[in-house]
Length: 161
Figure 1 (cartoon, rainbow, N blue to C red):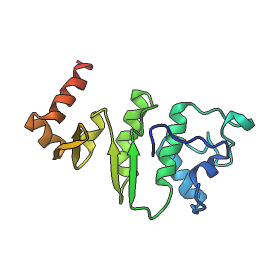
Figure 2: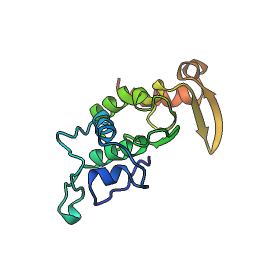
Figure 3: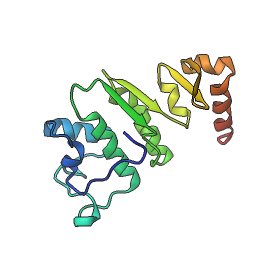
């Protein structure tokens, strides 16, 4: 899932299942509900995109569609999220990350993030600096090491103090 997800002017169902894979409506609806797009408000047959008279989703809603798209295929074992909540407001971001562990249950997930709060949820952090790996460890260990991760974490947390 890219931080600037593709927006297809098709139905919500077609936006979720792009490669001909099949997912039951129940699974699609459950996945959408998990990412904050309940199908009572956003039916699977909803046309998306104003190009053809469909719903004009906000950037955050499109990002939720993309998150659901990345999780919809049953049996996928590996998912990549590149700044998955970049277009979401802080409360929506918190909501997604509170569910993140549940959303990726049974999968290996690679989360690319510049905002370090969500990294507190992960098992292992790999810190890059200048294209090189400079630290690897769990978030608690990296904070205790006072290296690059701790420096970035402190810099970001200063905004909220």
